[in-house]
Every structure is written in C-alpha cells, then in structure tokens.
Amino acid sequence: MALDLYVKQVGEGPAVMLLHGLFGAGGNLGGLARALRAKFTVFSVDLPSHGRSEWLKNPSLSAMAESVQQWMDTAGIAQTHLVGHSLGGKVAMQLALQYPQRVDSLVVADIAPVKYSAHHDAVFAALGEIDAAHCTRREQAADLMAQHLKGDALIQFLLMSLRHDAEGILRWRFDLQGLRRSYSSMLAAPSVEQPYSGPVLFIKGGTSDYILEAHWPAIQRIFPEASIKVMSGCSHWLHAEKPQLFNGIVERFLVPLKPRMLPPAK
Image (tube, rainbow, N blue to C red; front, top):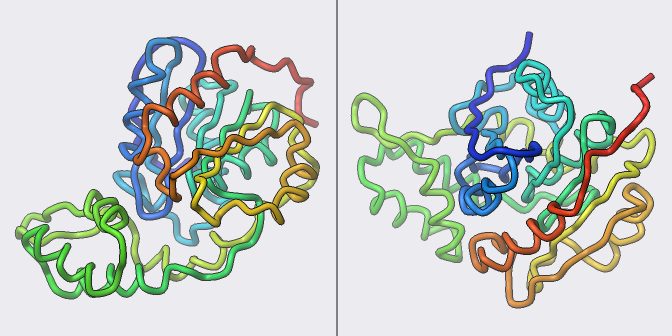
C-alpha cells in the first residue's frame, strides 16, 4: 500500500519534483518552486516521516525513493525532473538509480553519492531537549537550540518544522524517534545496480564540505553525464543564502532538456 505523501502542486508544463533535506519539509524549496512554475508543473514533496506526510516504520533512502515512486504512480506522473537538497538529493539519486526510466534529469544540491560519518549528534540532542521541554514559544525553543547548535541559519531552518498541538505545545513536524533510529541508513551511499545515464547537475556550496574533490570519482562512475557548479561564498544552505543564483542555475539546467525516451524497464 502506497504511503500517503503531502505534495503541493503549482505551475504548468513538464513535471519537476522538489525533495527537501533532513528535518525539513516541501516548503523549504518554495522559492525554487515559485521560480519554476511559469515553465514547469512543480511538485513540492514532504518526504516520508517529514512534514505532513505519513511516517515510515524504518526510514531509509530506498524506502523513501520507493514511496515517492509509488506516489508518482498514483498521481499519473510517468516521468519527472528531480531536484533534491541534502537528504532530498540522496533520495533523488536513489530514485534515479532504482527507476531510471521515470527520471528525465537530476539536480543534486550539496550532497554526494557516498557514505557520510555521523554529524548530527548536536542536532538530535537539541531536538530531543525541545521535545521534552514542552515549549510554547518559538523564542524559548530557539534559546534552547542555541545551547547546542552554532549558526543562526540552522536554528531558523529547524524552527520552521515546529507546530503547536491542540494544547499549545510546540511539536516537531517530523518523526524524531524514527529518524534517530534509522539515521545510519540515511548516511549510507545510494544503492547502485547500474549507472544513471541521464543528465545530472551537482551544485556545491563553495564553503561546504559535503561535496569534496575526493567524491568526484564516485560521482563520475555512478552519474557519467554529471557536471558540477560551485556557488562561491555559500555553505550547505546554498538555496537559502543566494536564492536567485541557485534558482537561476537550476532553471538554466532544466529548461533546454526534453523528456528522455527510454526502453521499458525489464
């Protein structure tokens, strides 16, 4: 049975699906959706276990990719362009590798197809403390997070996923315990049976260490048609720090592309 995903649709034209990062929601890429809607039908997806989408029992890259593919079936979307940031980029890569006939092209923002070491301990600690504190004001939650986390951009990003429940308590709009339990599976490299031969663009934040020169052999092996753009002066949050530049890079990549004609999957 297909997972119930929350997806917001805008615009008209070829399909583009936007996939957000860990602890986020579809609205995180809202600026890109607005930039593309004049030329594309844009689907902003709350990934499984995030936002208003149903939770997976065991979140993983393959399970999330499968859920998105099943939603495409339900929605009658035969093929789509994919744009993913961070975890969303990994899910997009996994989807393209598992179902290449469904993916016209791929834009991956500041993530590589490699296994990463754990680096969210402080984030999980902050999220858990806020969950236990029963905060009622965002200012209170922000102050608690600042005790664990450095960087206002990260704190502001996380605050976007807090919502008041019926009793006025701020709750996370993602499955904190499930994501913590399955965290290692989301750090893994995408599973590869054969390379994805379609057009691929990687966008790297110039000051970010999520895509390194050492990752390029893996990128070329798995995505032989890949190219890369570097956004100078940007961190991992490149789409938020320089939105006009980021949106322009994505649009210039997508607009000339035509749907790929592939043989049916065997």
